[in-house]
Length: 250
Length: 98
Image (cartoon, rainbow over all chains, first blue to last red; front, side, top):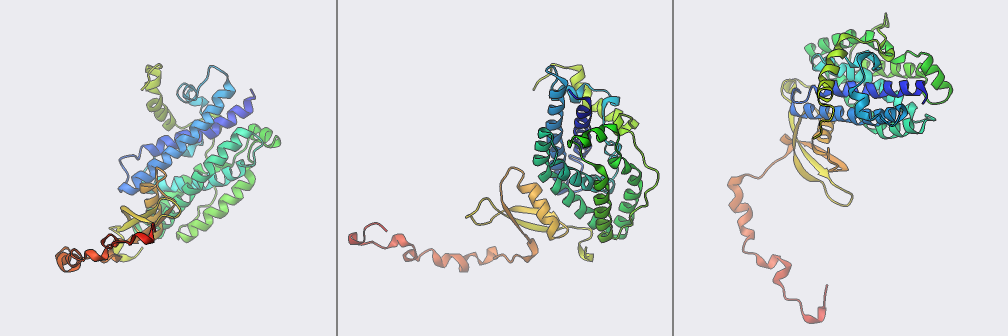
């Protein structure tokens, strides 16, 4: 077992798991039936991706591990998702702004992960890229409509983008884990992804008549297991049942 | 978005083609603010279980429907024209199977 590869796999798996969990909170609460179903579909896409990645992580950890054990019996400091994904959903505009900022990143990231020398990560990317391409199109269409919609929708989604901006820097930070795996051809170099992301985000915000915020101080820490208090509540809700009844089946 | 639909989304009729060689079939309707979102909403609502490979959407308003009041003049005259069905005709034995 290589500890860098396990950590990297968990970062990707946790991104999918935590965002999937957040989006699932919209189920039954969407503004209209169509969007309720759309977000629930997207939540399930992320959950499916999380399963593939956590299965891989479990396999790396050893025979006694399963995807469920990895998801439900790790504590908060052992989760490595991006902080932006654990933030509360906020209103529809906040949720869509986060989707747009993350989906755009995720699209460029997974497009590059298709070239990974790790066969399993490559296979995950091949399956996930179709879903992620749709997510990115869908959330970009929404940002255009909210930005170029009514005066109220314009102002509110601009505020959502502004508020979320300081959480976007973490998507592109790299540490020694990234460096080592990039050298091996396994991980994605995030420097070119950052450029592609800025360009695409600028393009869509422009069509949406929204202002692209200036890069300023950025939050970080999620990739190293330092989280906001919000993740604690997510894990409590997600983990209490399997922890109380570890043998439960249905 | 135009002024009249900013508060209420339009209704769109959805047509799905389940596979190549078949025609698009009406499957239901959805709400959406414009045509592109209508395609996406139709995709999310009606093709979640691999029901289709092609989607058409058309604004419900654009469809002109026949009126139930006109049922008699429109449809009953066809009821006694049995000779319009191919089964009305006896095919001579010499023709064999067609």
